[in-house]
Amino acid sequence: MTELQALLFDVDGTLADTERDGHRPAFNRAFADAGLDWDWSPELYGELLAVTGGKERIRYYLDKYNTGFRHDGDLDALIASLHKAKTAHYTRLLAEGAIPLRPGVKRLITEARAAGLRLAVATTTTPENVTALLRHALHPDAESWFEVIAAGDVVPAKKPDPGIYLYAMEKMGLTPAQCIAFEDSRNGILSSRGAGLATIIAVNGYTRDDDFTGAAIVLDHWGEPGQPFSVLQGDAGGRDHLDLELVRRLHSM
Image (cartoon, rainbow, N blue to C red):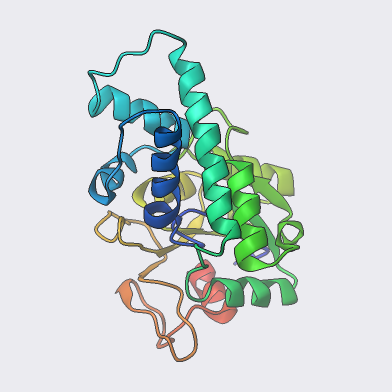
């Protein structure tokens, strides 16, 4: 079996519960700033998460849920402007400490670094969002911990397309057999598995009922000593939190 060399992380919903209480209110604040009466409720936002990427999500909302909206100017420019304002609101929320990491995230990343494993991010969110989360929720220097931050529009198609993972591995000079991915959603595992990666899933409130066929394991969170995870699919070998030993075992399955 090829030795594990790198951990590749999704961000939103995986490292932190950013969607419901981070991105969603940031979108709503951006809409209000622009004088729009759009309001994305938690329930509506769950449906909008079928589409990855913030700009793409706004367009999907207009195409499916707000078909009566008319804009006399450049719609692409409006969407880009709204997304830029949303990113500013989101990074402020992070700076205020409003979006903590999920259980086990800091511990596992710290353990992996100490063991000499290489780290990367593979996400559809913007680089600014990734940087803000890493700096404010993980460590002020955490951005430097990751060899590659593959984010936003660095590839033409977003998840579930596998391109973002393929890009990260190409930059690192690694093969799928040398890596493992961490995801939280159906689109995420379609992307990671499409790139040939073994994948560990930790669901969130929006993704608990997703189809995770092909996952190495599905957990409710990564867990901590004294704060055990629940195994929703797969075999944790009797362990109650995700540590590097369990990651290596799942990679070798």
